[in-house]
Image 1 (cartoon, rainbow, N blue to C red):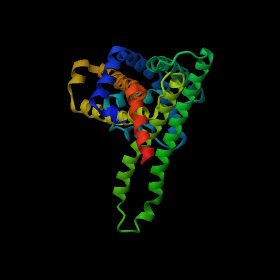
Image 2: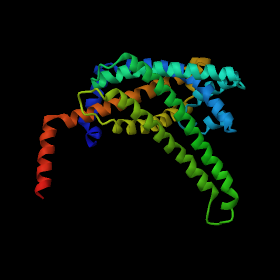
Image 3: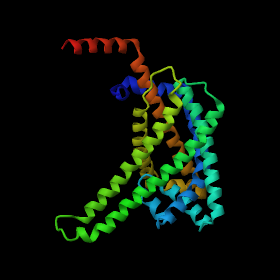
Length: 294
């Protein structure tokens, strides 16, 4: 694991990224993410309505990591869709699952190239892509329930907390605001783990997919936060691109997220190659021998 944070590890990941021209794959993935995002928002809107929550206020709770311009175009879209009918919800679910499955198939082709994990039944891969798309929607549903339940629990216990002078409600609320991002990291790490695992099981390497999933989920939050801060600090984008600024920033944000997903896979590959290196195997054998002697 320490190898990843060393200079040789960073160089190895960077070299693979540009040699395989994975930035192009990230651009293609961002297209599929856009196609999945908007029908998925219809589903999220229905989820928030069933939980008695306004989706706009829910999304604005994550404004630290969602660029303001992206939030604007999302809010405009939600205002356009308005109150949902059952027919619109069904269309949203079908479209989100279909485009999500297409995104997964595209991503799995990229990850299999990284892991050198080819082969398998194409029909099984096709069915599996829909299963992962459904799992993604279910994960979002439970994430929303957990976040909203935590907020509801704090409001419910507020009269009880007021009886104790040593309990500061503001500190509890601030703690929960940070804890939401921890939950987001856990959910995204679990989804990345499943995707990496599905694409690595035929690889000739002994690949551990957990490091890339954890690092990728943390990068999601950190890089999105930095990007959101950078965009909000600049006023030039709207002056240059006009009304297209929000669309361009949304596409750029999703492109960055696509790169992070691919970099997470490269981290797993770099770790596996480092462990499978003959020099490392000799080092491990010597280390195990000394440990047994002691």
